[in-house]
Amino acid sequence: MKRPAPSKPKPRGLVLRRNPQRVWGLHYDAGFLGDADRASIVSWLAQLHPLWEWRFSTNRPPPEGEQQRRLLRPVYWLGNWQFACLDYFRPPHGVVDRCVAAEPFPPVLAKLVALMEERARRMFKEPPDLPEGWHLNTCLVNFYGSRLDGERWVDSARVGEHKDFEPGPVASLSLGERALIQFVTSSRPGVRDDIAAQQWLDDGSLQLFGGARWKEQTFHRVQRVDTKGGHDFPPAIDGFRTRRVNFTFRFVPPRHVVPFRALSADAQADVEPYVRALAEHSAFFKSQL
Ligand SMILES: O=C(O)CCC(=O)C(=O)O
Image (cartoon, rainbow, N blue to C red; front, side, top):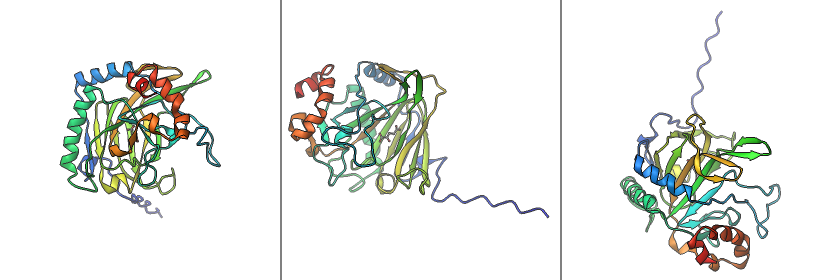
């Protein structure tokens, strides 16, 4: 007798593979970035000197069970710099010595940010989804690609499960190889990591996400980045090849952003080498020393 075919397991949690743009709090626009603005961003990238930070520092050594490590990728921050070794902005308790005043957005990003804010304000109307004073004043520029390990290129183009703790909606602009972003319910891979939504982020796309569901109740991760398009972005970074660049724009209440010299003595000591490295190429950071 033929066994009945096993019934297909039901997805646990809502899997929104096709149309996450129809889901409240998520918006996706594959064609957000025009050619001229894209070219202008790429030429701005060419003069950048990203940092490839270490996760811990002298005054903040690795906690038990963890090891000192470099981040998976080089980064650059605009508006304020959240150095990995000082830990990231996590209100309500993690707000002191976290956000160091950084360069403003270049004109092309400032112009795009105004459009992103307009869209976000149509999606989110009031606190807590749209906090008092919200505007996208912070940007993390992530460089995704491969790092040279001895003679081997090792792909490190991914980000593990995490939340962006800055309050309010986040806007994410992608350049280069498409990347798969997933919103999941667990902070550890394999542990109840039901996929609540996922989206391939295309070259030139904008994703907006906000509201409790996508900011608080789920984590997000970049599961993989394609290699098919042959993208290779400037600037040249020693031991690293960039095939995707992502800009995530966030909001840090301005009262939490402090000049480098207003950090505690320990925090200044931990990040001074980074600020000196930035100052070699940036009038802004030179003025902060
Ligand atoms: O690269 C992306 O698409 C997302 C980056 C991200 O999750 C982050 O910067 O927090």
